[in-house]
Picture 1 (tube, helix red, strand yellow):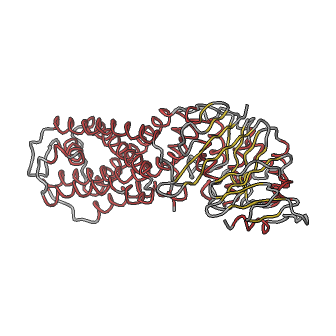
Picture 2 (cartoon, rainbow over the protein chains, first blue to last red):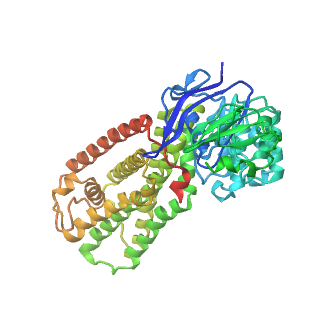
Length: 262
Length: 268
């Protein structure tokens, strides 16, 4: 049974067109799933719907319960700021302490994680006085400090320096938990071991593939090929990712720009 | 979890620089202006004038501090769906602790307003008048509860309507209403005395003056307002707001379009 099961998820903001269109998705036990896509494609909206911040009805199940009915399910954590916000005037120490208390988890794990990320010096600083990257790392610390079944990470490496990025990736790789990680970073796809990949464009989520299938031997084109590999629908066009005859390799973000221009 | 959430609220209010400036700073400045910026009233007018000043400061000070309540509640509304699903928090614990922490904050502002103004006025005018200390304490609790509920009302409305862009203006409405209604009656004698029974702002203002001077009236020359009716009117307003806040909170929980804003939208 899937840990997270989503069927026909639709969401729109106000009078705008659908931000999420008929999303079907499953996250299995122990799976590390990465969702990549351009800005505004709906990645964060997708995570916020799973967390219940944005209201959905009978579309998302976590551990076989609809998200709107879930209460006190402490086996899930996240680094999303809107979910974790208590007050910008709390110190880092207070912020971590209170979050651990709300989950009834010992705070030592979180402070050990903070030390692992070499962020001990931030303990007495106010959250609102931190830099973007420091704040992100505090939220990452809270997300990763505990024996959770499911961890949702939204752009965990954005604004993070290379040293701490490496430490973060180590933690994720050693963890046996299930992850959903949204990112723009192609390097992350290569470094998270054993991960699966979904591509989100204009609120459409592709089927699941492995990072190797994306990165190696791939062409990107807009005409339907004979050997279709994966189809990604955007607003005005559809993109097909196929194995290239000449083994083109998608090795950097520029190769995916075509995708991002949808 | 109520005590944990309560502590978070208390820390937020008392560590927030804007919150401290606009509540305690506001009281400090206006006490000094009243005491040293205007000529000292003489003789028979002194007792009433001083009481009117204290009443202004108490009511305005707490109404200004409600801006902090609105900001805090609107930002917390974003995290409520998460912490009530994935932490060990129940939604009534969030509401209750929020009301408690807001109430504590506004009462501390009110106590500071009373003590500081009595101290400065005693130094300046060599007089201190409190006719009925129990009534004063009671009305302080009532005022704090009234403005806490008003702040929560605006918070849920803004969150429901996704109008956080109006937050900076909406959060000032309690203060604006207090200024217009209370000052309007004092300076222009309009609207007339009957409004006092319908307007909770004017009713609370009059009860403060009554607790300080023993007279319930629009000004020194006017008296004879029924303090029991004033209290009943204020309590009816508070009860109505409790019901309205409860309804809005339930609407917020079930609304399909809630939380279509981010923390950046609130604090930009």
